[in-house]
Length: 191
Image (cartoon, rainbow, N blue to C red):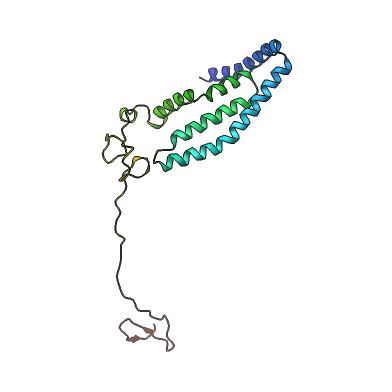
């Protein structure tokens, strides 16, 4: 595994450089520099706007009672696409452009949700059932949110507050004559 990672780490820059030289000789140096600068500017604009879109999507999901994991994955993929566009090179630009395509992101999010969030082995999680409902395996109903807390969990029943009723009398610690007073009113010598 380490050898494969080392090979990819060394092979990727060589592939990028070879592709840059090949495309640069075909379209010219100024056109190639223009493409690299344009994709870097586009990537930085995508990263700048991604934060605001991420916050809006997260708050909308939470307001609707949906888990915000979908918008988080979406934002992470768009951020990755922006970073790949900023990195100089044509392979990274193509990968970043592919990640900007919504259906591609939807497939990656579905795959990631199944394997990272659902654990990858839970058949109920893939079939639209909620394990957090009142009874495990009960279908999650998105329209009926009256008795459910956010994200499909049942609400805890509201308990009445504990009220302790009592009377109190303030007793001074040290009266002037040096004796402490008892609640019954009798004094005792201070020892």
